[in-house]
Image 1 (cartoon, helix red, strand yellow):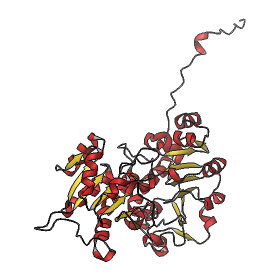
Image 2: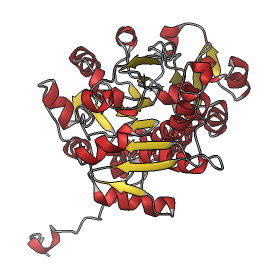
Image 3: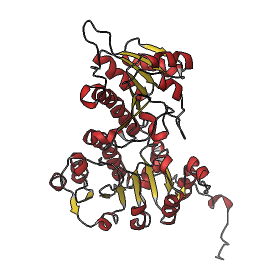
Image 4: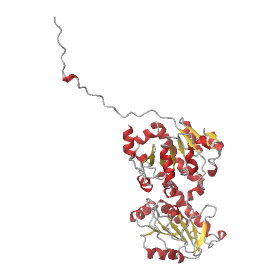
Length: 404
């Protein structure tokens, strides 16, 4: 029988392909380095020994520089007992693929950075220099900032907890400087039977303002809160669960209230750039002698025209007979509490990164995390930074998608 020609039919050549799904990779073991901070007055540490213990028990490796926890009263022994490796040579720490810092990257750190490293730290936009960013771009760094790190509820957890600490500390600081021992007016902050309550004016109804108000009310002071955002004032009252005196920022009303108060707190801030100056030098000059101004917004320039930056060593100065307190990093004065707050956010995040199989995978699966990344593999992904230093901006979403 003659061989028949093979029949070629087009219907055979088309076969449906299986759909390829995004398979979650196996967890990755992280290698985390915690250097000792050499930045000015930085006492915090980003991971406490307890947090390190959890990370190590989950199969990750943590290396801590000798005395890194000193400012928060955590010893090397605390860390080594939690399973961390203590290293005496600073350059060794910087060989870790993931660096976790409680202060921004400083000039001395730049030569030690490795290629393709991941850095989790604050960024302090006002003090940022283009040289830092350019050097980090050269080394193809992926950098995540505390300030913009978002959680699943859409809030900024580290900024929130630092603001809670600063707000709570404000009244303690005011009480300290009103006492006779600090050459203050000799006034006890609060309400004593038969004596009119101490009057506190708080400018700004954000988290700092809310916690300052909460503490002042708890002490029995009379509190007046100013903010231009009426929704925020309403939210403040809802959060406090009680009515309190509020007003929009109207110069005449503000001036009148400042004339008779013992404590004035500046807690206004802008999303970016300088804090608005709402209290003029004239208003300060009209305040009672011996009263105190605490400008929490000083790291963004301050809300009082007379404010100047001070340090933890010499926290106050007197101008127009009014005590001014202008320490920019109040939480660093309560370093252990602040370290625990930061650690509570970073430890679960690092565990999640480990579970997801590394930072790249985590960024792909977690949209909130993308907000905090200002540099990805050396590309600037923060629009504000790219504008400020005239650098090329790259959309992080496009970057990640192109790598899949």
